Length: 139
Image 1: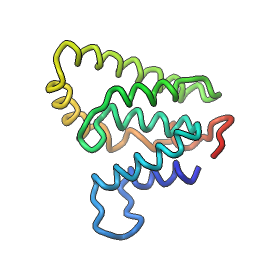
Image 2: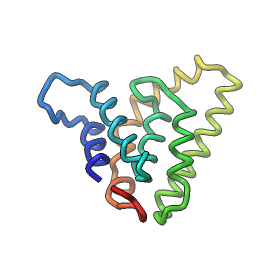
Image 3: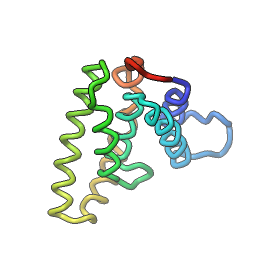
C-alpha cells in the first residue's frame, strides 16, 4: 500500500522533498511507484498506469503500455467495479489503437497532448481506484 500511496502523492503533485521538482518529475515518480505496486498485483495501481499511459505520460501517449496494464487490472481479483472500469478503458484503448493504425502516429500524439492536459488531473487516485485494497494483494 505504501508504494501505491507514494504514487498517488506524486501524481497529485505533492512535493515530498520540498525541492524544485516540477510536474514532469512528479509524474515520472508516480509512474515509478505505481509500477512497483502494480508489479506486486495491486489492481488499482495497474488501472492508474493504464490511465496515465492512455492520457500521455509526460506528454507521450503509449497505448501499448496502457493496454498491457489495463488488461492486468481487468483480470478478476475481487473488485468488480475496478475490473469493469479497467475493461471499459481497455476497450477504449483498443479502439484508439485501431484508429492510430488508420491515421498514423502524428494524430495520436496530437490527441495525447490535448487529452493529457484535460484528463490527467483527476483520473487517478480517486475513491474508486485508491480507497479499496484488492483481494490477494501482497502490499
